[in-house]
Length: 511
Image (cartoon, rainbow, N blue to C red; front, side, top):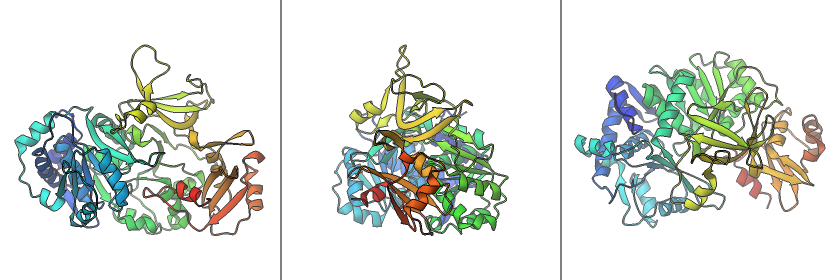
């Protein structure tokens, strides 16, 4: 049995068993597991020959269009015992520069000829090796070098560094270990029944941690991953047709995409008979749209997952086992295997049943911290305050939740999304949930206007809404002190590259 010191060992195992089976397809072609392994080792050989001094890994920034080529580079980074750094191909040059700077003049960049043009106008240290993808994959594989390099890896070494937005505007590189990803893939396989006959329809960008679900459950099981063309997500009417025509069995999409599909009405027209798992994470999933999906595709298992990037993607899950009213809170459930959730109140004590507190996480999925940022790492990753007996590191998520009488975790919202208005503590997410219960509201985002000390409600709707009309409806669900003071109606919200509502842009529009 292969020792799983590195997640790329999953590819070695599956290539031996299902070598000629299609591993991944995109809009330009497909690749078998054996070819993915071979090209990955070619990239790994080239990178391993440029090993830095000492044993510290050299990050491999992958600056390519979302495609099979990215996955080849991810495998190549792992074969060379280095973490990969996925970067959006359309990311602004100044943000790419910040990521390069944070790597502190070490590592590699893999791009294509078009990407090279962007890099030429940037300040790339001479100590960072820049490679053209098409040239790397022509490298002759050195099996002995790859195995020697890979054997030195231990499962607590970093597999990838994903950069998220920091509150200061500086990107933070979340550094995740191999063991967290391997454990997660095994949990996905067990929970959702993924096997060699499964087909996963990938939506998440590779620089977004939700993609870990798709990539590594396929490498573990021999399932096929289809990279759904990004343009399709702009046309929700077309998505169910794509899922049906490609025999997709599992989707793991952000709620915004699922909401758009539900609101389009297409689910009543197109059936997806092979679809078995509908999984969502990243935002709150409104019950109104979830119920539309459940009615249209009753054969599916529906699962609400929760987890920040700092937790190897996911740390809790809830299999939806009953109908929920529009105004109900959908649980985020219980901890995944090899993970533990602690809800700490304001006194740093374990919260009682129905007492809200901060979600804190312990387990193999907890990341190693932020790359080259020890100060903010020490603030977010701390000693467990309820364990005085030995060192136990927890991640403080900054998310609020409580545990109900059934032992299920109920997500409330962000600690930094909780505001005080006239002495009343208000969770903006609760107002958004109430707004989603109003007929004609397709999307909702509540923002606190610090200048005027008031709540502004943005809603996405094709109907005409007045503040008074909206508040009359909201009073059915929330008290008067939580009602918004201003209403802005939009045809469509701006979205981030991850397909989440772009709250920053909405808030900045108030200035």
